[in-house]
Length: 331
Length: 230
Image 1: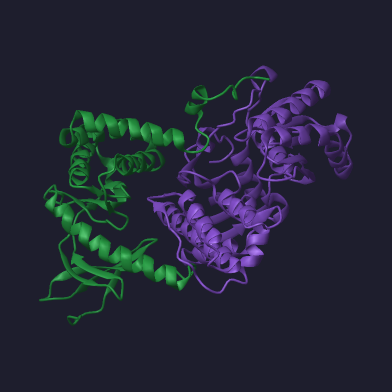
Image 2 (image 1 turned 90 degrees about the vertical axis):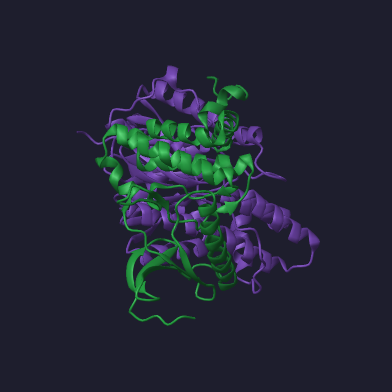
């Protein structure tokens, strides 16, 4: 089979990404433009407006980075969900237009699957238990019989959202989570906060509320609160991940998604993997945050296994669950 | 503390605790469940989690008996070492035998499990980790619930709903081939104890919990026009 070049568009939230991947598993380009809110969190309509304004230049820079012409592209993939409606719709519109213009097939990709697949590709992992943590997702998952089965997930807000909102309320500069991680390093005193694990599922909203109350009381050092919030949140993730790893006996543990950039979480996952004799992998920084490369690569995997999304069926799926997707390329 | 007169033998190592077989009193073989310290969490947090869960589990194991559910006899609770010494229940772990069972036996087993969970809920016990790995079927055909590590005392519909929701998720992820039949058989047994109305309320709760989760497609038709092509 001839080499396939796939252009992938990611636009589930604040990041607009364009990536180009080849069927040999090479990432030729991975460009991104991020919408930064003036205040507060991501406004979906504003983010979508940013994406439509920036797509031209991101597309150009991805093509020139990959040193390919538009006519060399054989496949267009886009993140079809889950995510914010207006943002997804912008990406989908661009993808449809490109596919029609270039006269190539279109593939709608599940954003969560893409985070797992780029992690597997970059880490050369085979069949890992995966902790996917970001501003929009908190999922412990592993492949079993044709799907990525969800072993544990958040019952309310995602862990990245918990950290981001706390950082924002504490007045830390945007994006908040990396700054929160730096402050946490200077934390000395552990402050007790609610630890909520329900079976294999997690709840972060009570933790966030309690941390915000302590913050507003002004009785604690911000650094101590940052440290304690991170420790409690990551201990919860650690517990559920460890149980899933013990339960599935998978030989590998993969950490992926934006929160995977956190060093403290990385070291916790490594300790857990060692304890259970599993290999520990962390998605590289450039593929941790939302990116187009993961969409391009997953588009190739899906396409080579017979998945195509006709334009007429390419409507977005803002609530598309990871475990609804048939994974035809793994055994 | 009673003398321990033989070397503990590690028989199982879960994510949360290690299980040792040892001879403790009068030559009786007992199971020691020792909660492991987790080096990945701060020691203050670790200690409070271990202490709380050790005491709590022992209490609930006892209460479950009052509810009419077979659980191991507790001999000793050693809080500083986060260890519970209890009866060693011989039998087969339900998870490992399900695939071998013919369908009617499997459904019957889930019906009985449903009755037992109903009894727990009826007495205000929410299990918190209803998986088939935590259930043992003895040679005398009794189902033992052996792990109450995440159990709590509550009569809230919400918590009962989460309990059953977790059971359903466990079935979907581990026993997906026959998850649905098993769960409906389970619910029939549950209803025998809890009654029609309470069960219907909890089933509605489970649906609500499932929709509340992130990215649930069933929720789309209840919301805006996000799913429409634009």
